[in-house]
Image 1: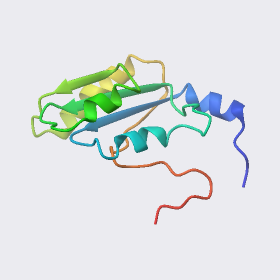
Image 2: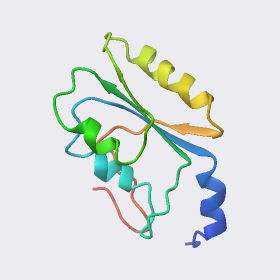
Image 3: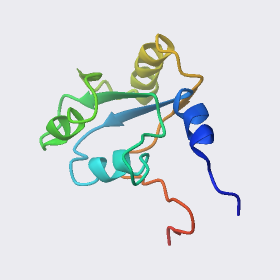
Image 4: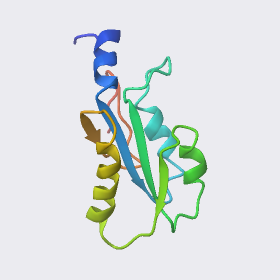
Length: 116
């Protein structure tokens, strides 16, 4: 298995935008965001963009605010694609080349870790 170098990370970091659409994800969102960081705290993304359903009743907002100022509430309209497109429009104003939409409970596994 090839080792990832700091140059590889720097090249990826400036191209990747993480975009979440969340509702009541306080239990796992911090773990998900941190999974896109290396042990030294270096992030694997250049931007973190978050939309939160205004019906959220837990501490999701307070948790994600620790990681980004780009947090916006929206009124859920039973149309996921509308909210995804709103987030995409925000992301397109940034300088990243790739946009990744993980779910708030999904965790990126590093190295030999396996998600069983």
